[in-house]
Image 1: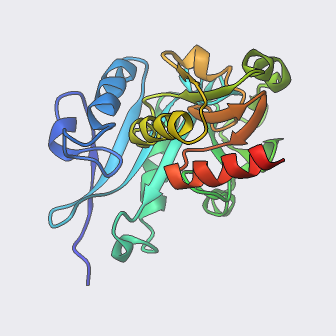
Image 2: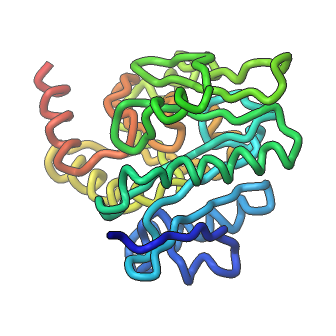
Amino acid sequence: MIDPLRIIELTPDNILNHGICGYKDPERPGFLEKVAWFKQRYQEGLRIKSLYSELNGSQGIIEYIPGEFCWRPVSAGGYMFIHCLFVGFKKMYKDHGYASLLLDQCEKDALKDKLHGVAVVTRKSSFMVGKDIFLKRGYTVTDKAPPDFELLVLKFINAAGDPAFTHNRPENIKRFAHGLTIIRADQCPYTVKNVREISNTAKSIFGLKVNIVDLDTYREAQKSPCPFGVFCILYNGIIIAEHPISNTRFINIMKNVLKN
């Protein structure tokens, strides 16, 4: 039997006590960067609800923000937009309906704020939630982006317009037509350590200079060439990674890219 979990709303005052995204150690790369990012976005309506175990700490989160300020290349004004939904930092907490409890929190806040509904980007891949839980709750697919990203929406007002991906990726990719570029933002704490390692590897193993683009505002993130928004690796104008990857994965990708 697992211990009961309670939902805690993170605020600028309590976030250091509870951690975020499975991080709590201030010495861990990405933790303090994410905390600072959260504090800046809080005034824009960003909310993070954490599933908290007295025995094991945070065991899941949902992060959402009014769509105007979302950090994905999506037009979702008037909707609440979910950045992240994850449950089960320890496997014993998976498959107990906790993700639905977190979604309840988001949907209730969207209703309270009299928004059109809730939107989310999904994908069957690491770092993103799959669409099944949303389909079961009545969400529908309103748009798609390559290679396999889907934008889902739960509408409270049927006549409201549909959120959509911003379809200007070719124009955005042209800005990164030469060399190796890594796009990142502190919205995802995992990118700090990954980008540092990948940059060192690119130079030491492949002799490549890395152009690191740090996204500082939601407007910049909404112009990202990748649907994930806050992480992307491009080489000579071609996207080679659509979400955060390990240093080992980067090495394997670059060996294949350079071989071809």
